[in-house]
Length: 296
Image (cartoon, rainbow, N blue to C red; front, side):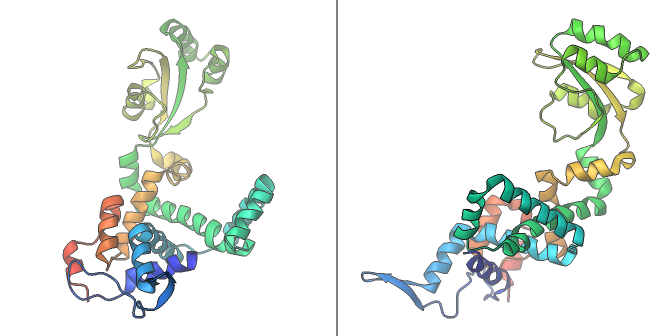
């Protein structure tokens, strides 16, 4: 199936079509019969059209991204070692279940490393490369800030904890333990993607500065009260944390894919896949429909 999907992707990306906006890719030997049931015959073109309509968009995007990764990201010894470590952990964790999965998919360990794990690591590195290339744009958009957050069940407890924090007689970690806060009192990176914090708390984090010190912040729901301190709001001072956090964020990965699709002129030559990507992955569709009309 994977080999067939690769064939499908290559055909949809590379097959020249006559210039019209409803063009569709066709196989040269599409009339070849693959099998029949009673009087009904299924040809190569029938199978291709079915796969095109059901999995064409995701298959093309996956393989286009893989092709870009191969051009942009070198496979290093460190990546190979990380992939092997992950494989070993899967084998240890899932045992016979993992072995059965490999057998069912007719894959060797080497196949799994080269076709799954290493490409996944390359995709992560590709996102990191995008963050590096578009650093100011990405940090302006996602507003990464280092902050310390403590949560309390009511305002009296939060108010009582505020004084020793301000005068330095207690650390945030100590206050957290004493009050059994769900946050441990260490400084962490927060971005606008963090949805586990109340919107009011996030507003204080993204708009505050280290000069503000500790702030008491009631939540919009009123069920908790937070103490918040912005520790650093200059991403240049914690670049590694920004990279490690944002590279694993789906929104940033999607932004990276769009960025590299534009860079490499990602172009669809089949109207069925074009419409599917337009429906399910509109940000990845970097060509204009007029370009499809002019495909040679």
